Length: 245
Ligand code: MF3
Ligand code: CO
Image 1 (cartoon, rainbow, N blue to C red):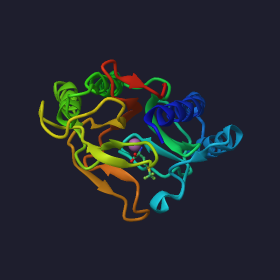
Image 2 (image 1 turned 45 degrees about the vertical axis):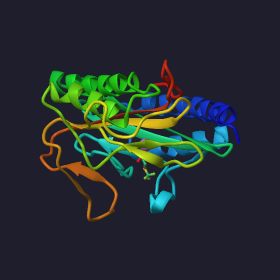
Image 3 (image 1 turned 30 degrees about the vertical axis):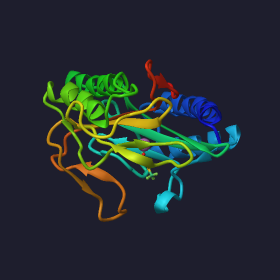
Image 4 (image 1 turned 90 degrees about the horizontal axis):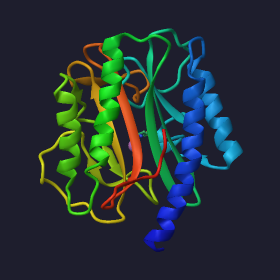
């Protein structure tokens, strides 16, 4: 199948995913339970006739990944009511007409501390700076470098174990796209390539551990915050962002 058709379908998938993610994000308020957010995401997938891409992916049990405070990625929704000052990453993927889209935001609940706010805003800026590098002829290293330099300037740490990825007919395709890198190094990007660019950033040390209990949820080792922003993007001279926050 040709690339134009694939990208057109990916835009449709991304449009639906964006609507769902925006609604889930708007619902994430003080007093709301994480399990309600999972249920909402699921209901919206049914309503829009898309498949939640993460559910049953390598055994992952839920439709969304929710990263409360020190949770890095792959947080399985659990019984918890959001409180003022929490930060929460909401990561979701959908499959629609044979193609995938993947997107994540970190929301701030009520009055978060100025430090947490600056941290979340910097992580968002990191993914936007990385997307600006998604041009033909640039490399994977240029993307990683944009994320790394943006956050390290403020004393934050990219998580090396967790990466962005190619996306299209599969949720995860080659290449891996780390949040660290050297300018000009690594594989070259090409026009029309479809990728999920993710900034996965810890406020303190880069070290993480994975829950022994569920085998999925990853936490910062030092207990400090972690934030995540992700977009599905088409490589072009003007990089094209398919998803919307
Ligand atoms: N956006 C994340 C990723 O691309 C979430 C995947 S969750 C999983 O890795 F369950 F699908 F693994
Ligand atoms: Co992803």
